[in-house]
Length: 115
Length: 109
Image 1 (cartoon, rainbow over the protein chains, first blue to last red):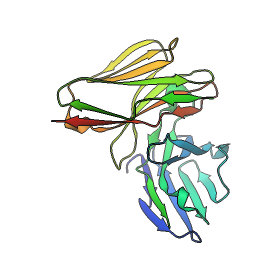
Image 2 (image 1 turned 60 degrees about the horizontal axis):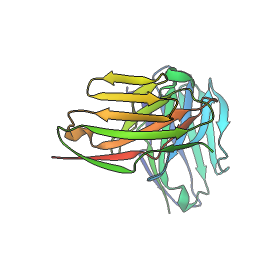
Image 3 (image 1 turned 180 degrees about the vertical axis):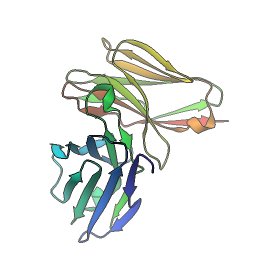
Image 4 (image 1 turned 60 degrees about the vertical axis):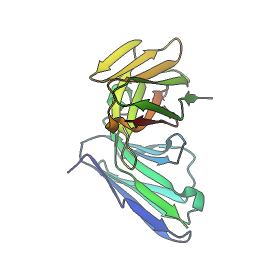
């Protein structure tokens, strides 16, 4: 099994749907992250979990709801999204968030389209 | 505010050398990362610099000047597979990563 796995790879949903993105890491890391990647924009950090505890929530709208049941799994629950939420959602993990050990290992991403 | 600047797009020729620049303005500084991202794939780690100077890893080298808030990624003997986006990110005093928008590198035969 590869390092960080995300499912689904592609998701199309209407604005009234509820869906979830899943991330699993097999690296034994302690920190997990959700990032949003839009074309020609910097990566936007959404949420950080360190030892299963949420340590960052960068003013993300409540229509995005993270869940971290254990240090290997991370979910992003989606409901009543807007078309501007269409983007690539990247999950990442790191041994710890500081210094070189903060090197991030990314999943392939979930490409989300909101109609 | 905190900011990272890097060129949007660069073009280079197979076999040549290219330098991708990155300037940063952050509240404190705990190092600078370069990542490579091929289209449709995950970003992958290339380098981390926290001290001034040049770090070499095979065909890729990364340079940092803390006093100038400046870094560059140097790619030698370019290959077609080097066509990708290169992301620069600085770690601030709170160990938050500040990301640039990425430089799309196009390699021509």
